[in-house]
Image (cartoon, rainbow, N blue to C red; front, side, top):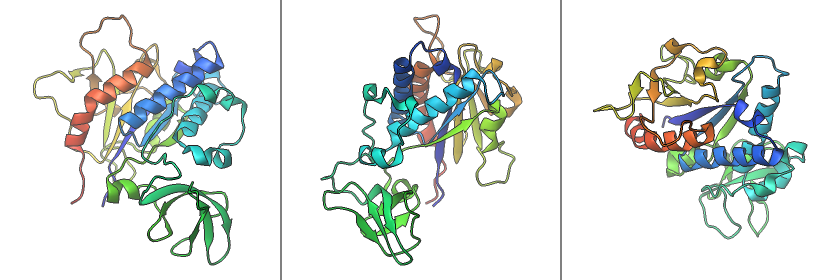
Length: 289
């Protein structure tokens, strides 16, 4: 079956503008929670003010990516997979993601996330957070030592991370990508609908209060898609981001027609917009029978 994916692109300036590391960390937690609640498959953090990879916002992008990756990692794997780093000094303030792949030791599940703790030519042992200890894999391709892996517990083999969602219908977390080359790099992994590449985003939605379409328009619906990305701007909007070109977007969308505050912060816009878009996304997603 073809995997349908939903991505969001977040500007790094929202982190660089925060006054303390604790506030920046909490911001990352808000983005991670919004992504999980709305079943987002990929978070792209981009520099919305510069394409200089040594800029303040580039540093903020790396920080934000590290925090949202930490949030997405199941608790029992964090010691092995999330190396100690100054960017993670305030992770104690983060709310739990509580996603379906964040399993407890006693939870029954068909799949689990794990880390390979030993490997040889014929088998591998993977810590999947069970009280009984690591699971031995001796079927299919074997993961390298230290790698994160999705395990089919019944067949005792490593599977693609998309399998729990494709076969089991269960949300299974998100991937994180940093794009320091502005919006051009954000869309580089995808591109336009005209592209024949299987990795292309075939639906690109830019959110803006200046959008030419409104989600409240009569008869509003999304076109059918397999790979969707929703772009969010910083304080000055998407229009100020390097690489902005309205012709690259399939929809230039206003998600809020009326509001009780002069501004909606990006971290608020992500949850509100994705929640409003969710039923339209479900209706438009192209899934193979």
